[in-house]
Length: 143
Image (cartoon, rainbow, N blue to C red; front, side, top):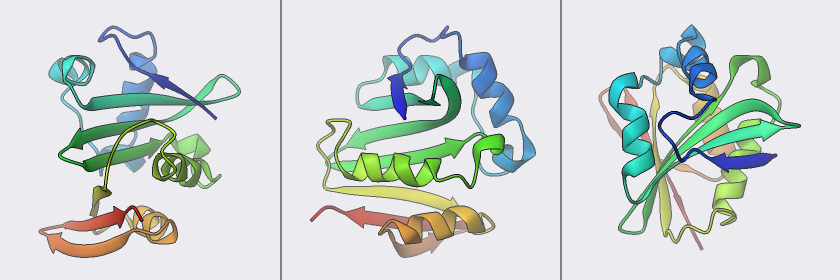
């Protein structure tokens, strides 16, 4: 897989990403403010948005935010590429330090109805540390 950092708020892939994010299998769990989101991720220190490609085909995205040694993360695989191991590879690449980010732990919040993500994060070494409303809090510690 190839990871490309989204660096400009007018990136040519944004329409494709937005189209994917509007599909019900994604939009029920992740929403973005189209007007401000792209400016935020391209102009805020410690915030990284990667486009993920397999053979030059966009298969997913990763939103990473690093603050005080904690890496907050969300991973999206476009519906037509789900259940093919892409998310697992993306998470393992983050855990392995392939992005050069200095973190002690990774935290994710997962909607209680998102059974596929709960299974995914359990399978790659994350541990549920609590629940806040409809969101399970998961953590992965380095070491």
